[in-house]
Structures are given as structure tokens and as C-alpha cells.
Amino acid sequence: MPHALVLGLLAGLGIALPLGAIGVLLLAEGMQHGWRPAASGALGVALVDAGYAVLAVLTGAAVTAALDGRERTVRVLGAGVLTLIAGRGLLALRRPAAAVPADLGGTERRPLACLGRFVALTAINPMTAIYFTVLAAGLSATSGLDLTRPAQATAFVAGIGLGSLSWQVVLATIGAVAGIRLSPSVRTGIGAVGYAIVLGYAVLLLVT
Image (spheres, rainbow, N blue to C red):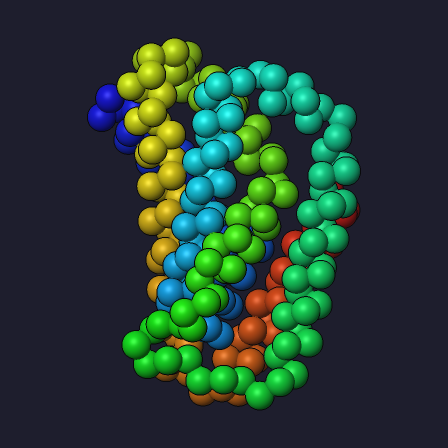
């Protein structure tokens, strides 16, 4: 079981470490609203990653078959959502930047809404499920991982969730710390760059 947990941790980090649109949004959330909302978003991302890992373990090749031929539709949908998020974010930056609380906190009502927002944003990328499906099949064939055994499957999924969560929380923390150390004008500039990167990911989804 420890072997399966370590493999899961590495798999979770593997999907989380590349700084994509979700990572950029987590950084921006931390800078603009503090640590608690951003950490809630990080939890939402990790929950979806773990959920897709469960799906991959339970359904295996059926996930890949279900999405076969629909990748273009998924990409267009994802690009549309990212464009909407970036557009709203850029418009919000036109308002005076609010100070981030010095305790790295946030408002009491935002964290739950932020969790739901990042769950939805992460869930529109089912290619993650294919990643875990292919990875699980490869590990089963080469590393002795037996996902038909409930204990190993549970440890593998838990490792994925923990691996993903650990890195997302790091991003949330970096954003929150930067938010209290940077002036409002600098945070606004960084936010504009971040949302421009999100728009870039939307374009990339459309052209690939």
C-alpha cells in the first residue's frame, strides 16, 4: 500500500506541477483575495483530480472510449470558459485594487464559492481523466501496482489527491504572500499579465 501511495503522489504532482490556466488563476486569487479563498480553490482542484483518478481506476478504458472523437468539443468549451474568466478578471482589474488582509485571510463567504468555482473550472478538462487512465494502465503493467485490490486502489487515489493538493496550496500561498507584499498597482499589473496568460491558454486550446 505505501508503494501505491507514493505512485499516486507522483502522479498527482505530475498533473499539477505544469503551470497552466488553473495555476495562474490560483495565484491571482491569492494575490487579490487572500489565502483562505485561494486555499479553498486549491482544495477544489485537488478534489476534481482525485475524482478523475477514481473514474480512471473504476472505468479504465471506457473513459478514453467515451471521449474519443469529442476532444475538439471539449477544447472549444474549455476555451470559451477560460475566455469568459479572463474577460471578467480584466474588467474587475479596472476597479481600485483592495488591500489583501495582512493575516493572509479572506472574507468569510468567499472560500466556499471559490471552491465551487475551481471545481467547475477543473472539471471541464476531462483530458485529466485520460491522463490518469493511461498512467494507471502503464503503472499496473510495469510497477506491480494492482488496482483491482481495493487497498492499493484507495492508496493510489489518495496519493493523487494529496500530491495535487500540496502543489495547489503552494501556489495559493505564493499568491497570498505576494498580495500583502506588493502595492495595489503592482498587483493589478501582475493580475493583468496573469489573465492575459489565461487568454493565451484559451487560444492554445482552439488551435491545437
